[in-house]
Length: 322
Image 1 (cartoon, rainbow, N blue to C red):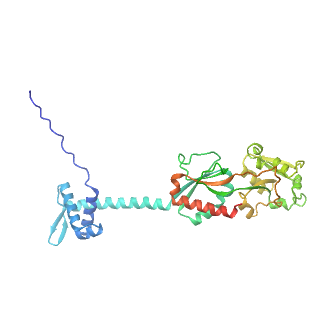
Image 2 (cartoon, rainbow, N blue to C red):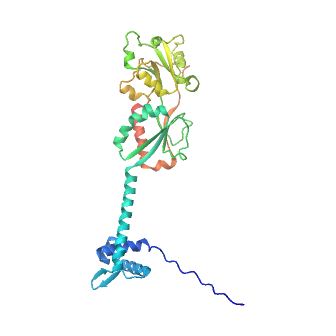
Image 3 (cartoon, rainbow, N blue to C red):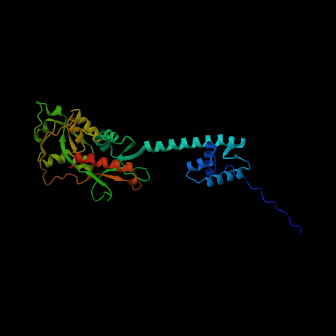
């Protein structure tokens, strides 16, 4: 039986030497000194010498002419220096760009309802940008429940009952519901608006699903609570979005039920006023027990930019908190 001789495959040569050897070579080639290269890279002179010897063995060529108290590059060494220096310079620039971009463009994504975004959050964002110009904020406004981790949301601002809010949530504020209108409407002498009974002279601005989904925003419930069941308004305009209704109130089209402090900034700016003193509510009419909460996604809770945004939210809410 003839034994067959199987040749082992030729050993594959690495395409590139180890990066630490190339860094040591580049520093030594640039300064023509193993000692200076060692100081630059926080190594010993003997460590640099061993790196150069290992690189020469790996490449199979001599890179330095070792003269008395001096070094000189061979032709191979000069060729390698040009290539390695250019490659390391490009790597450093790429790393710098990536690092600068990450540091100067820290982005957080915030989800909240359309109403909260348009009436409370967005008008205040310039103040946040002035305090934190290095943090970009992305607003995702919708009225749907989202999975923060799956949808890559950092912070959610939601209107919830205390028992349903996560333990880690930060309460911003609750709310009170009072009639609001434009200052121009309030100054109309032909149609007085001094007491709740004067609503008979005015158009009421309403939300179409309020009686079912938002009873605290229903004019019928409010009038009944104020013992004004028989008041017949001059008319009614119905909307399916709360922020649209508030814009109509600002334009002087009628009287709306305002959510305070959601409208606090508009009232401070004089775009809206509350025409009546806030009366004590009868026992058979309740304001909602819900509040606005800031909820931070678990992995985002450690991000400095997310912490700063929640701190800012809390400070802003403190100006309006009930």
